[in-house]
Length: 85
Image (cartoon, rainbow, N blue to C red):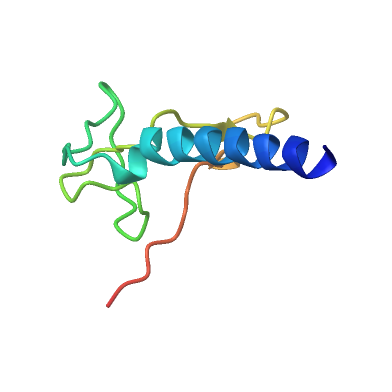
């Protein structure tokens, strides 16, 4: 009886994982060009979100720190370094 319960649980787990695997956007066959954020320009060419035309393609940006008193005190916390070849 225990073996049957374990087997049923494994089947449900496999079905669940298969659905999650298929739904992952990484495996979608659509090749969408990332869209840039309207009104945001970026000069940081070694950021993974830089589109080559001075636009940011991140889904959102975070700028900080909260205690900044001028633009020179701020930093884009969304920045991720792009490995240049």
